[in-house]
Amino acid sequence: MGRKTAWEERATLEEKAVADAGRARDAALRLEAGRAKAKDAHDRLVAAHRDGNDSREIERAKQAIRKTGEDLQFLKAEAQGLAQRAAAKQQIANFDVTDNSRLLDELRPGATEVRDRLAAAFAALPEIAAEYDRYVTKASALVSAAGKSPREEGPDGHGLDQLLQAIRQQLNTREIPVPLPHGRHSAWVEQQNQAAAKAQARESATARAA
Image 1 (cartoon, one colour):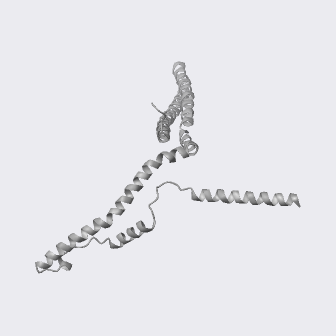
Image 2: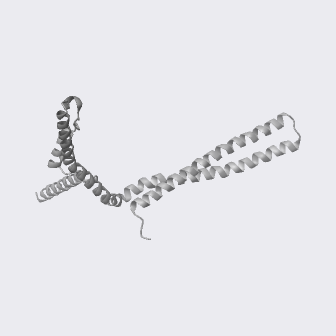
Image 3: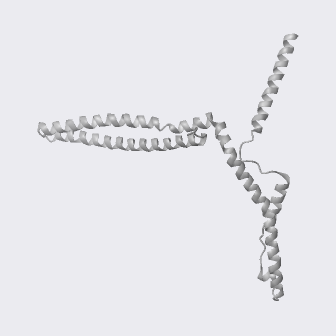
């Protein structure tokens, strides 16, 4: 089996984060129940002393406290460990940074394909609307032939004239972009930084030569 794609790796991290978060919640619930159990054992010991119970009852209460104390220590350690593991969400955030280029590159084929489908759908709309209009014209003529008014009886038009005009204008003036970052702003900032660095270097050279 070949190397996983970046998105498959990211999905693995997400699954781990969800599973760890679930285990952390379960551990926290068990810890809460353990604390309640410890409190109950302590209350029983206090009650045994207060009521003057025999030494066996008091000893059983002490044993219950020792047992719940040990359980609490274990549950605290488990909850703490799982809480740390639940930090896998941070791993996802880190992955989005370290493998940003891979993730974007793997989006490109699907993003390009959906852009092409969208462009094809919009390009087909004017002709589909024109065919719709031809049906409206034929049906209106038949309504008139029956001595009725198409304005009153229909058929109604599609009501998309303004939208179709906007689509035609869009298709004639601008290509639908691929839904991915174009990076033009970052490139511009880099050019500005390089130009500023060159200007500073020239000024320094001039100052040294003076």
